[in-house]
Image (cartoon, rainbow over all chains, first blue to last red; front, side, top):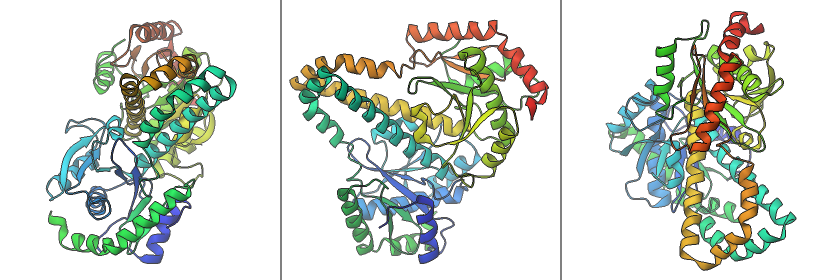
Length: 235
Length: 235
C-alpha cells in the first residue's frame, strides 16, 4: 500500500514483483465513487497508449478484481468510447471490443464519458492517457466547486445560514459518492498485491486500502489472474 | 449555426465548404465555461487520433480564433498531458510540443486535466477522443449533481429552506461558469464559418453562438487562418 507517484508505483510493482506471465502490460485501476456503487476505471496512467490486447487484459483483470475484491457477481464491463455506435472510435477500440465480446466477460457495450458518474458499469476500460485525464478532471472540478462555495460561506451570511439547513442533504448526497470507501487503486498484472491510495488520502481511505489489499491477497487475486490468463481467458 | 450531431457537423462542414488549403484535419473546438474566462478545448471529437501536425494546427487555429472572436491578446496555449514534466505522454504529444514551441504561438507548457476548470489557459489542445471524453464527463457530473440535489429539495423540507438562503450564492458561483455565454463550439479549418451549439442549448446560448459566428465571419476568421497556415505559421 503506497500513496506516492502513480507511474512510479506501476513501474516499481513490475520491477520488484515481476509481471504475471502472459500479461503484456500491467493496468492501474482507479475505484471511482460513482452513484451508489464504485466503478473500476482502468487504465488510469500505467499504460499511456494501448494495443487491443492491453485493453482486453485490463477487462479480464478488472473483472477478476471486482469479483474477488468487491464481491460483484459477474461484473459488467464496458469500453469507454465517443459514442454507443459500433462505428465510433478507432481501430484499437474496435479490435479490443471484438476480443472482449468473444470472451466470457460480461460485456455490455461502449460507455460514453457522461455515463461514468451514473454508475453505468462495474468496470470501464480505456487507455491510460484517457483514464488519467478523467480522474484528474473530476478531481479538479470537485475541488474548484468546493473552493468556490467555501469562499461564499466565508464572505456572506446568507449562504452560511443556508448551509446549516442543507447540511444533512449534502451529507446524504455526498455519502453516495464517498471515494474514500472506494478503497484505493489496484495495480493489476504484477506478480503480487499493490494498491495505490490517493496522495491526499486521509487515514480512513488508507485503512480501506489496506483492508482491500489484505482481502485481495487472502483471496489469491494474483493467482486467479494468473490462472485466467493462462487458460486464455476463454477467448 | 447548427445544434445536431458533432461528427456529422465537422464532416458536413468539410464536404460543403471544403478544407482550408494546408489544413490536414479540421478541428472541433468547445468553449468551456471555466473559472472567470472561457477556454477553447480542441479537438473534441472531429479527429479521433491525431498526428503531431494536427495538434499543432489546432493550436494555430485555436489561437487565431481566440484572438479574433474573444479579443484575447496573445492567447496562451497548452497541450493536455498526464503531467507537467517533458517526459510525460507519448511521442505524438512530444513532437507536437516541439512544433508549437518552435512557432510564434504563446505556448505555456503542458496542462493537466485538473487545471482545466481553473482557467489555466485560453487554448488547450488534445486529440478528439480525449477532448470528447472531457466535455462529456463534465456534463455527466454536472447533471448528476443537479439531479441529486433536485431530488433532495423535492423530498425534504430543510434543504428547500436552505436553498432559499443559498440562492444568491449559487447564482454568483454558477455565473462564473456560464457555458451559454461561451458561445458555441467552432469548427475550424473548414473553408467557411461553422459554429456548433449544444444539443440542449437554450435560446440564449444559440443567440450567443449566432453573434459569435457573425463576429468570426465579419473579422474574416477563415481568411486569417488561411493566411496563417499559408505563411507556414512562423514555424
